[in-house]
Length: 272
Image (cartoon, rainbow, N blue to C red):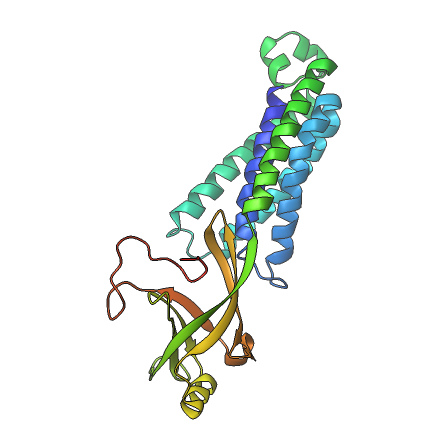
């Protein structure tokens, strides 16, 4: 039963780990396919725990295969992330993953070659290398875990990856910037003056100067996980599509010409 819980725990741990990192991988990039495989592998690893309850060798083999894919994914992150030493959270998370993955590999390999005769002679081996599990107990434990899993997944679906669209009024100002191509255009949210979009675009600057617009309408979509912003995309600026003006950055500021803050200011994707 310990091994069932081990696979369930590892599958869930890797799923959440890869689920959140997957938000930062763009479709078509080199890491997109590998990240997708890692998510699928973590789900299959989770399911291998249930298979293990009824067919131990099959569960072990499936878990071993999935674990190999997850190790390849983590090694790829290590080799491709030059800031890993500075990113302590990522380094710590990957370190824990590799420890668990090595434990799983060692257990799987030993399990595949150990004989039932050796297991029968030791209580320790019976606990960690069972060749049979009481089916009634397996059904009760498996059913309880399914109920808990459905609840967790339901919460995840309801409160992560939530995407909405809002439209806000923004004021603007134009500045010369020596370090970037194009004029710097700052679009400051009228009702949320601590938040603003920064554009480096001569095209947008020329439009604003030519039309002498004082207030613009900006429509953008945003994604949140449990209320925390995970992504955004400008859809339109006064009926022009958001991609017309190139790179942009959503920023917040307290002081330095912007209103002072007592705590975190209300964001433009939140209702006042």
